[in-house]
Image (cartoon, rainbow, N blue to C red; front, top):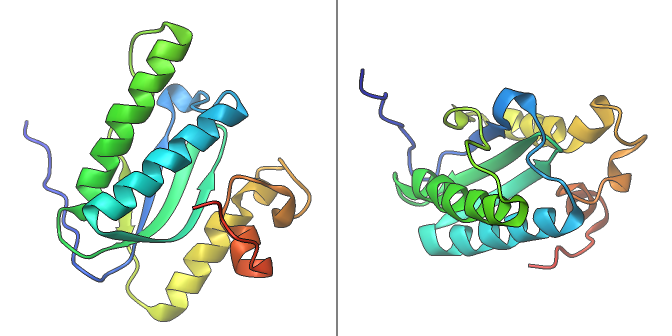
Amino acid sequence: MPRKTRMYLPDIPVHVMRRGNNRDACFFCEDEYRYFLDRLREGLSRFGVALHAYALMTNHVHLLMTPRHTAGISRLMQHLGRHYVLYIKRQYRCTGTLWEGRHKASLVQADQYLLTCMRYIELNPVVAGMVQSPEQYRWSSYRWHAWANPIRW
């Protein structure tokens, strides 16, 4: 059965989530978070996608993005998959899949929901019990939004 076509509209924000296979970890050390963020930065620029919020959890990823073109997010997610998965497979000399199926995506239509979605993403580490407050978690956009701490890229 063919896959359903992804429908992204230019200038409409999208909440994208990608989960590790069997809910297993997809990040194992700090270098991997950095590598993923570097590939994300490259892809955002290359495929014309704006990033509003993110949280890289141990076993999944949340991204709130707006594409300039209909294919931007799909190409970005392919770019991340190709580069990051290959990096992990080489690093750990493993085979098989890292991600559980295709990424999940939801259009974010109202401006009010955009802020709600950002809050949901950036509070994810707190809800998961990984930290007591969101500023303690290094791998999310919270510090930028709350304290204007610059993100390296």
